Image 1 (cartoon, one colour):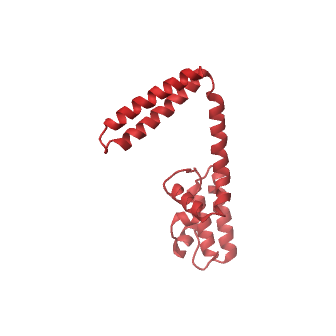
Image 2: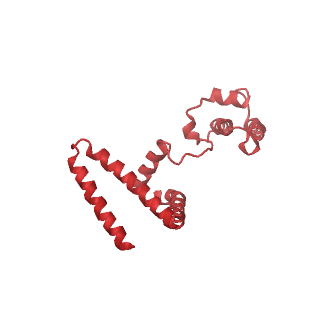
Image 3: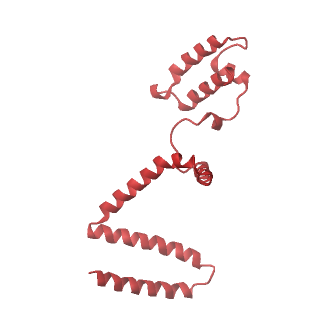
Length: 163
């Protein structure tokens, strides 16, 4: 059976090279991309037909989970990887449906922070904390509130308490 696969592989490579050299130089990169996609799909189809696709998908899932869990830990030690991770997150890869960090919310003035918490400019630290606690209990995402509003409320408190 392996001999049959090798013969088919040699014939496929020969035909692919024949078509590749006939293409104009400007069309070759696109031809390579399409060929790679078709090759991967053919391999997956062959594995599915022979019943050996399960372990490939399981191994792929484990590798992806491992990378996503431990990549942030590795980034502490490798500035180049940290730049790569930042670019991937900037373009929407690995996006999560959680609240944005305070730095991603934009700038907020002290007046806006007072308005969000519903306080006057003369409010004390205790009043700020009490207003924050009351609002966050109503708007916390764990209790069905908006994660965006909760992040805004937290940012307002941090600004007013100068953290």
